[in-house]
Each structure stands twice: as structure tokens, then as C-alpha cells.
Length: 296
Image (cartoon, rainbow, N blue to C red; front, top):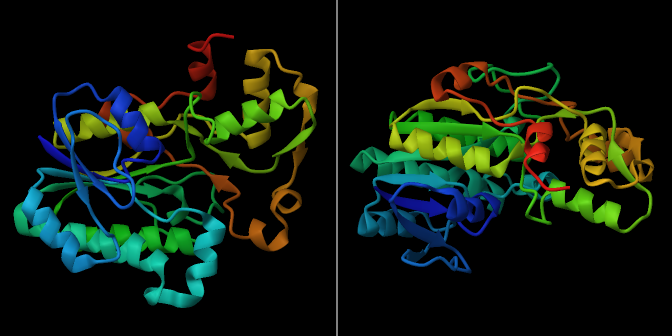
């Protein structure tokens, strides 16, 4: 297959380069920096230019588009909220997504769209794939509208929702930041009153490959079967590597982020992946399972 990818330079794109097993041809639709990957086509693409996006897609004519690029930082997105539909967050997370969908409607291409748990409000313990959406922050609102835009077009579509992708090998992810904090040998906080489901990036890419190769359509939740608090996540990592776990201490969401920023966070950043697991044949790994494969 010819697979065009947005967001190739991000964590999931870097993981894809390392973990994809098939012999597919990839097209890196980059904005500023093409990925350093052999035998790959590079095409410059501005997600703010819808007309140019569709023209570019017509020229490269991919069978599959894996759309991972987005503006994702909750606080930065919230600052852009005052711009509404004229803002960069809406233009990238909604309008660019719709443009990709329009190309797919025209050509029959399969769109794989990376979404988020933030389409929900986190007030319930967990959410199934087709639960009613109630985003509580602008990031979640725009990703939800991106989903809706694609669904309205009746295309071959796979929506993938996950929670806090990480890689033990990448210091920019939550896992790597915790390890770095331990190495400084100074006390550091972690949130103790929030549940989340951090997901190994390799498991997300494995699911994307399975979905594309088997032409599976619908909404999929790619998360471990168990939730955990950020504090417990940090303690598990510390125990595995033999760090002094007394260095990490708990803070509430409000203490960690402040009252206003805490309101934008989900108390339960948790997805129910039972149905997705039945379709895909397996679930993402818990942090304990990931750690067992790592040297101490």
C-alpha cells in the first residue's frame, strides 16, 4: 500500500519507523522537517492550506492516509479558543482533517485518524467506543469535531483513540520525564487523584498496522486493560529501575496544575477497550508488562 502520513516526525511517527513490519510504501507529508528515513517519499504540506492539501493528495494518490498531526497541548489549545473557528487549532484539528476526508470521499482512500480520550469529559469511570461525547477543553472539542467531520463523509474510516502515548526509549514522553526526574536525585511530584491509561507507542502502531492491513473500519480504543494514577505510574517505573521511590510524592490535580488548568483535565482519562480488543485480538500492554521486558 501507499500510505501517506501526517505527523511523521512525532512520537508515533518515529515509532512507526522502528516497528512497522509490512512492506508498504510511506509518504512523509511534512510541514517543516522531513523525517530521516530511507526509501521514503517526502512531500511538503501546509495543514492550514486546505486547497493545497487536496491537490497534493491527488498528486501522490495514497491508498491510506494516517492522520496523526494535530495541535495537542491542552493549555495552548485553550489559549487559541478565543479565535474560535478562525484559530490555528480549529484550522488544523478540524478543517485540515475535513480536507483529508474530502480527498478520501473522492478516491476511496482509507483514513486512519488519531483521536483522543479528551473527546469525553472524564466524569465517568470509563468510556466505550460509542459513548456520547462531552469534551471539556478546546483540544477535545476540536478533535471531536474532526471525528464528526470525517464520519459525516461516509468514507472508509478508522478512528483510533488512545491515552498519553509513551516510549521508554524517548525522553520527551511521560515515561522518559519520570526517569529523568529520578536521575536528578531530588524530590518531584506526580498527580495522585487522577486515573489514566498511559499507552506504549508500539502498541498503538501495532494496532494501526493491523487495522490498515485488514481494512478494519470503525472506532477503536487502544489502551491497556487497567487504569493507574500518575503517582503509581511513577512508582512502578522507579521500583523497576531501582530508584529511590521516596523521591516522588503525590499532589492533587489542583495542586499540580492550579485550579483553572486543573478544570481542563480529565479526572478519569480512561477508555474501555473491551470491544476493540475483541476485534483486534489483543489489547495494549500495562506498564508492568512493558517494564518486564526492559533491563533493570
